[in-house]
Length: 254
Image (cartoon, rainbow, N blue to C red):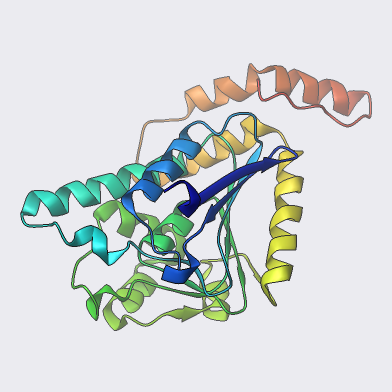
């Protein structure tokens, strides 16, 4: 499995690559688990970029072979619980996550992209959950909630009921992605540029914003802990001092 999900760190930026281009980067269970492992403890990196090998797919969902052993309702419940756990891990990753998408971004791949903080795409990207015409399964409530927060319930219904894939320009108009780039090379360059920008910003500010948005969506408890985390931090004192002395702040994430 090692070669099916690549992870390397360059200049403080972590690069995760789904590396099964011959299978349109379809995801195996070990790939999901490795992704969750990295997102849980990204180490010293400031930003994670997630992408797929080649130009044909970001990730074309879960590899159907993973379902062959399913025989009971518990198998299905266990699968959805696994996917939900992985996606929540990505959402709660302590550093910003950027999905850089080219080609097919469907099923589990689209769910991963939706769980990232930011999504940018090449013009050939296609998004969707064509399960109503393929497997006949369904998305979990947490997946539906995540998508609805991004594009609204009407778009989610259209995407799933019609089983069609949204073009990159449609995804941009719907708010599913924030930028559309002309090709793979431009996508890679912009992802790195964006990651470099975020790596220079206050880590706790971005972490608190991410968590606040998640709580707002899920009607979770209030934000006193997030406010304490930021205002009691060394970074906040550093930011004030840097502002008053007219210098660039040096963030430590503490």
